[in-house]
Structure formats: C-alpha cells, structure tokens
Length: 395
Image (cartoon, rainbow, N blue to C red; front, side, top):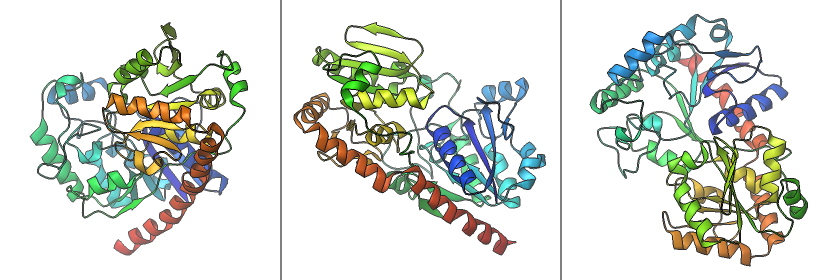
C-alpha cells in the first residue's frame, strides 16, 4: 500500500509534524509514502514541492478566491498520484492547493482528509468564534485582520466550498471530539467521520532530571521556569501572547521562555527564542520547564501540549477547543476559563503548589495510554484498508 500525503509544509507546523509521525510509522510497517507540499524543507526524493505560477497567485488574490486557482488537477497526472492507493489530505489551505480538484481526485482514488483546524468548515479562516454555522459553514473573523484577502468574498466562498463538498467523496478524520461536533453542524454532516487523536513519539519526548535540563538550556537549576511554544511566537495573536506578557508581569521572579519567534532577545523576565526544529533541543526545553503555558484564544488538538506532557511537564491552558480532551483538570494540568487572566494565575499557582513528581508521572501516563504516535499510526493503519474497500465497492 502506498499513501500520498498533501500538506502545506513538509516539516514545520503541527500538521506537518503529524504527517511526519505518520510517515515514520507507516514506513516502519513496510508501507511506501510520497509527500506533496508548498514548502519543501528536506532533500528527500519522495517529497515534491508544489509550484504555482505567479499569474495564478495574482488572480487568486484579486478575486479573493483560494478555492479554484491553484495547483490541483495537475496532481492527477503525476507518477506519485497514479501509484498511490490512498490520498491523505492534511492542511491544504494557505494558497497553494485548489480545493476544486477534490471532486476529480476523489473520483480516481480513495481520499481521507485530516482536519487540523476549522478551516475546512469555515468559509476561509482557520478558526471561528461563532457558536453555530451560517448556511452550512462557519464564518470566521473579519478579513481586515489578515493581508491575503483584499475583500470579503464570503458568499461565493461558502457556496463554492459546499458545492465542491457535495460532488466529492472523502473520509474525514478529526483529531478531537470538539471539532467532530462542529463538523456535524455543517454541510459536511453527511460525510463519514472518525476521531483519531494526534499522537507524539514517546521515545522522542520523555522526562529527565529537571534541574539538569535547566542548566542545559542556560537557566539556573533552582530558577522557576515557564515555557510557551507557538509558531510565530508573540506575533501569533491566537496563541495569546498578550496573556503571556500579563503573566510575566504578575510573576516577575519567574523566568519565562517563548519559543517560535523571528529572533532571539530578552525583555525583563521573558527570553524570546527562534523556532526550534531540532527535537533533541526542543525536548530539553520541555524537560526543563516547570509548566507549559498555552493561553490560546482558539485550539483544536495541539502537539506542543502533548510533547510537554510526554516530558512530564504539566500544561496550564485555556479550556478551548480540544484542550479538555488532553488535560485532566487539576490532575495532570490546569484548564482556566477562556480569556480569564485571574484563573490563569490560579493555574500557575496550582502547579507550583502540587507535587512535581506526582504530576509529572500523571502527565507521562496520560500520553502513553492515550496519545502516543504508535497508537495514532495503528488507527490509520486500520482505517486505510477500509477506505480502499469502500472505494472498490463504489466502482
């Protein structure tokens, strides 16, 4: 069996990391894989960079339409597509892949699509703060907050997206029950849906002596340390950088480290670091931290929290998205009321008042029992043959 993955990035970002864990696990089981992406970040021959001519990008920008203009049907003519038994879509938003090609792709091959955020069920955006969809899909934030939409083509995007979905056949995978319930409210409610939680490699992320880990990353062994990790660091508004700053002001004696920024710098008790791609280095930061802070306005099923817990580090987060499925409140972490700074402060105090050894053991056990990469791979290995059989029955 050969699986063709399609995702915006090859290595960076949560969806890319899920792909890499899947690819590693599948290849260990003797399966072959190939990977199409907009951002190729390795020299692997099995990874193909999707290229879009400038005129497509300009036309998509002027028409505020990311559904029709990009690379898509060209995929069908590639050797990788022809050899594939399954097409596995992940994050295909981000102005590189045409959703309109889904109809023809799903006619020729069985398709599974793992949703990493709300973008597939929103007219355009990755997250929506609306409780219910409107006319079949959710409506996200104002496009004035982002630069790649020059006007709000909301009605067309919704109608076009729903039309594409109606004419396409695919299996949906949701990493969280929270997102699955959102999907059931939309025009995708009639599509087959299964929940497969994201998982992390427990041999790659594991606990160690915290004092030694702190010294390894340049922090005194007796210094209290709070870690935050997110793509684009403090510039990522959805990850709650404003709350990190408020907490740092409230706890001036605690060292904060923010990973994922454009550059390295220090401001008062916050040390800003660039994005870390090396898992061995990133692991040291998780191992050193007393807690991971995740004050996001919106989440689905993030990997950073799972990686931290695998290292025995508890998470203090807002109770949004699928966070309550990862964290057992006041057992292996703390779930604060969304956007409530006082509750977030209570969460930090709770972790420091709890036995570090006991909570570390609970965190590790939660990952080993529920959210390992091996467990995730096994569930996809069970799913793929069923999709092939269903496709053959239809044809």
